[in-house]
Image (cartoon, rainbow, N blue to C red; front, side, top):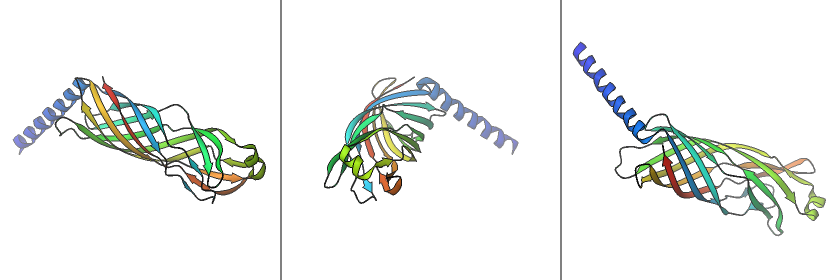
Length: 205
């Protein structure tokens, strides 16, 4: 019995050592730069048919690998400007949003030639520079809640190109919404809830 326990302990130590040796060889940090297509769901309960335009945005993320399989990723961009539209009225204004997202990830390491991963986490979005056309402002006196908290889901893959360089494909679903007010009274909720599909390069060190 003691011999079996000793053998198991040695095996665990060797496996753990190999895993950490692999992580040390690859590095614990990874930085990716992506071009991302933002495709908004544009679900609106105000009755106005609110929507924002889709666009391609730049994205940078920083990941830290606690083990070869477990990592945390912080996703960043700069404030993105969007046109705000309503059914039958066209463009009624504009706004900017800044949506940093923090994800916990599991990376699969038993595939040859590519490294898929899945992630889940939380998003905080700050709406700023909210502008409405003068006629809309005078008629409705509209405003929105400028803070949004929501979940985020992710699936992606890193494909090695060289020792530390990777080609990355990534898709995220981010839950972003804001309450809409007219003359201080809530009239509904506007859900952006975009799908973000990106491609880029990653450097691990």
